Image (cartoon, rainbow over all chains, first blue to last red; front, top):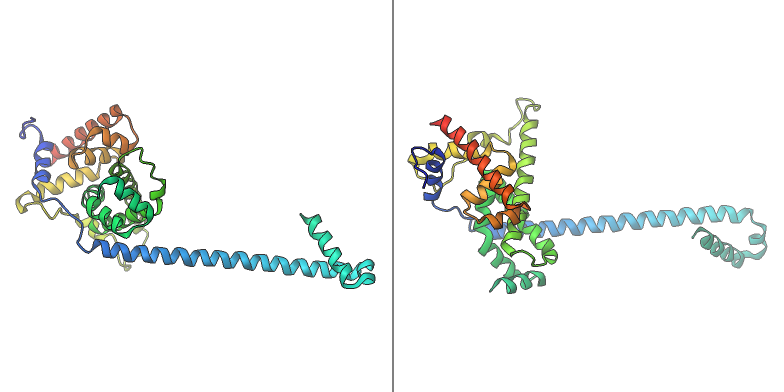
Amino acid sequence: MIHQELDPLADHLRILEDADPQSLDPDFYNRLRDRMLRHRQKQERSALRHAGLATGILALLFILNLVWLGRNAGTDSSVEANGISGFASFYSQSISSDL
Amino acid sequence: MNELELISGLKRGDEAAFRRLVEVHGDSLYRLVMGILQDPEDAEDAMQEVFIRVHASIDSFRGDARLSTWLYRIAVHKALEKARSRKIRLGLRRWLPSWMPVEGERLAQGWMHPGIRTEDREKARALMEAIAALPERQRIAFTLILVQGMAYEEVCSIMGLGLKAVESLVSRAKVNLRKRLGAHR
C-alpha cells in the first residue's frame, strides 16, 4: 500500500472512496421516457416531411414530364393524326426510352 | 430477470425490460459519466442520450461482450461527445458580447460531489480539477479503473485498447495527477 504522506494521489482518491456513491435522480426514468417520446415524435415528423418532399418532387417531375410530352405531341403529326391513342402510344414509347 | 432475458426483452421492445435496464445499470453509468463530465446537468443529458441510443440500437448488440461493457462503451462515447461540445461552447463564449447570458457559468464555479464530507471538499475539488485537466484517454482510463474500480480487461474492451496501452495510460495519468496534486499541497 502506498503511504498517503508520500503519495498525494492516494490521499485524494481515499476521499472519493469514502464518499457516498452518487445515484441517478429517482425521477430520471420519467424524464427519459418523455424525451424518448419527443424523440420518436420528432423522427415521425421528420419521416413525414421527407415522404412529403419526395412525393412533391415526384409530382413535379410527373407534371413537367406531361408538359414536355404535351409540347412535343403538339408538333408530332402522327399524334395529331391518331388522336388520344397515338398520344398514349407516344407517351409509353417516351417512358420506355427514358428508362 | 437475468441478462439474457433482459436483452431479449429489450429486443422485443418490452418497456418493463427497459425500465429494469435503467434500474440495474443507471447508477454505475451515471457515476462514470459524472466522472468524465463533472457536471450534473450535462451528465443527465448524456445519460438520456445513452439510453435513447441503447433503445435504438439494441438489435445490433450481438452478445460478443457483456451487456454492461457495451453500455459503458456507449456511455464513454456520449460523455466524450458532450465534453467536446461543451469545450466548443465554452470556446465560443469569448466571442459573445458581454451582455449575453452565459450558459457555462456554473462550470467555472466547479462541481462538487454531493457525497463528499465538508472537510474533504478542498482536496476533492483539487482532484476533480486535476482529473479534468488530463488528456482525454488518460482521463477515461483513470476514471474507469481508479474511480470506478473496474477490471483492466473490461476497460480494455470498453476502450478498444490492449492491456499494455491501458496500463500505460493509467500510469501516465497517475504521474500527471501526482505532479498537479503535489503542487497543490
